[in-house]
Image (cartoon, rainbow, N blue to C red; front, side, top):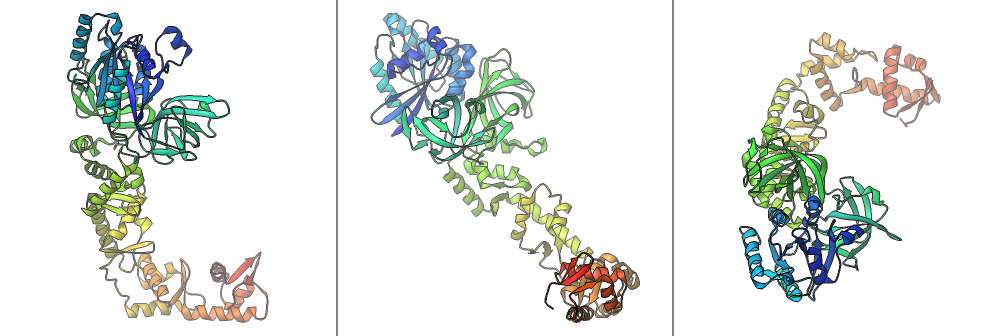
Length: 623
């Protein structure tokens, strides 16, 4: 069954709640104070059940002081019912509510002239003209106007039918996106525990599903779901839903928090936006504090305009907003701005990047234009490019932009096919970043091989340091996509590398120097005697060890393979007669000094041939 959310709008005491009660039989004023004073202070909820659809109604307060509660209700609505009292006509909050709905890009609505029983026909016509003038150039310009009386029931059935006709034309919210529900109420029910309510903006959720409450990061589980008094197994985008949470207290949650799936969305205190000011407001200057409203959340932020000192009335501009408290936003979400003092609605806009670059040099006007007005595939490409060497995962992209998951995956696939981006395991990098990385790697390896002719390759950790990639470990996944290089274990080298061969005569000199029975020169001594740098000698010794001509005892000591085998045979013979061996016995066995003997024993321990037990060694590996 189709589900649509209708929100009320209008000046205080024009009868929004009365009209809702006449339509549904439900009194949306739930607070004692509301009933005593006869005005709506907080959000109220009701619903109209038709044979073919359910229209959930969010009744909002009209008093200027309670505008923040009104803003908490309009974030998830599909259409508006603007209520104007026929005996008073358009009033200040009528215009402010209308402006807010227009800024939030609500596309459809209906106008209700309430209290028709209090005026004559001529006054009613004047009220209609007043309303038509007020809604000119707004989304309600061509909306139907229905005169009713909530008190007498005049035209209530007609209004109900007109709401149905309008609701049937509304496009349903997609269930293919990430589940998101801004919380507008938190309470406890005896025997159930904590319950939160809200309008599901996207996706779906089921009983027993894990959920995360942001920005606090509390993880919970759905114990139960309800919509308009009906128990559900699954809830979808576009529904008013109550969620019974497991293991969470009422005090841990507040209006403005978001319920979503775990590890999908990120809190943000710095957002990139496109702002539109209303026509009849004062300019918004760079650095001004503002009240910022997004879905059910409210915080204070400071405006930082892009290449401007102020925004004039009815003007648009790109900006950053630094927020006092983190919000949960996605690209495409709409918000409202109100002046810090005195409180008045200034304008609103759209989030174009909830996680923008912090450095001004990384921000380009053409990128902002695409993020504001481009296609999904264009926006994704810009975001991937903006992440530079950090890259971005598909999961992060899904939580970045308010769009269907299927459409995001299709767009990513197209970008890969067009070679606009590179997909490395679970991360995406822009082709420009890949080419920049490739050029840096190739130049680095050319220099490295020229200066280290005997080295097998450059260690990855050294490569990270040389390219200052410590903060971007994921970029190393791109190495395997560079055709000109070869990754072998933990080293990287050019495929075209022609390693310098060791001169046979020089190799013979090294082996001859090391043939001093169990007392060969240490590496620094060998370097001096051969007149070669210790660094270059290290590379040559590693090659000879890899070829099996010598054995590395430690970083400073190497033995020819024949000497090493002789040591193993001597050891085998010794342990065939005794079960344990002291350092002194081993030194005597090799006819060497204690310094060499300790080095050899530590090597044998590391190879698990011998085991040190106190001051003795035992044989642990059959020789």
